[in-house]
Amino acid sequence: MNLVPRIVELEGELTAWRRDFHAHPELGYEERRTSELVAERLASFGIEVHRGLAGTGVVGTLRGKLGDGPAIGLRADMDALPMDEMTNLPHASKHAGRMHACGHDGHTTMLLGAARYLAETRNFKGTVHFIFQPAEEMLCGGERMVKEGLFDLFPCSQVYGMHNSPSFAPGQIGVRAGPVLAAADTFEITLTGRGGHGAFPHTTIDPVVVGAHVITALQTLISRQLDPIDSGVVSVTRMHAGSADNVIPPHAILGGTTRAFRPETRAALIEGVHRIANSVAHALRAEAEVRFSEAAYPPTIATEAEAQHAAAIAAKVVGDAGVIWDHPPIMGGEDFAFMLQKVPGAFVMLGGDGGDDPIMCHDPRFDFNDATLKIGASFWARLVEETLSA
Ligand code: NI
Image (cartoon, rainbow, N blue to C red; front, side):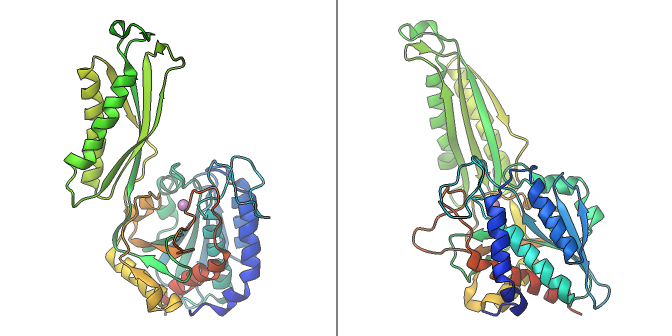
């Protein structure tokens, strides 16, 4: 491992910052304390601070001491999840129903650590924009920053993001070109029949039975419609109907998510959910109303040159053996996708556990691995110095 010595020196401080963020998680667009701390710290390092993009977003701008050059963006996310923490750690969430279960506390800390080192040294040519975005967890904070002019205010020729990965061991960094994470869409299907007495089904149109058929038929989108060489997911994750054992309800509601890596596959799955829900409902005398949420993420697609470049930098930090090149794409979604739609770049996965049964992100027992803060921060620092070398 070839870490930045100054960042190793800062490890104790970075760990304290990370645990403080962890103890004070804030949900999407409510990251007031977090963004205040981020802005304060960036300013204390002598970095120019811009606030207000997507509400709580913060962008720090730093120019190198070696003269003019291109500008690149580095992005971290700041939000927590609406869930209860079950770690029992001393730095566990102080707020019921809010938890940093995806490691965004670590992402924010690593970017701050790199910013501090780079502000002290400024050993590069050009400009780096440190992008701290709100509301990554299906709330489209990244999309909103882009729409509100992120890359007009802060033009970047390349942009990079990083996420911790419990699947990889500490000291490993995963990088791939092309699709890294999936397009993520969510849907709700409202089935309307006619309610009535549970003993007289013939006088009703039973939306519960319709729902069961819709769920079964949706399985064929992946098993019978999708090319087996391609990948996609349709998961029905919610069903709500009825309130009494002897009453057939008038409505049933199904909710779920679709995932795909290719835009064509994504569109086909969305069309398929509409078609199957409507057709099956009609066949059974009911009506279906299908609604896909506007909070949807396109696939996160890394450009070849920037992915290769990120892998080369990762190798300088964790050694060739530490780089997991071309790891399988991940069915999770990421709103860094919106930034990659505008600017070439890559998204790297920082190893955090790598055991046989790692605690994954979004698990109430999850905690970011502090031993990897210095690795991620060193990667950011080296990425800037090498990309913007004189
Ligand atoms: Ni995340």
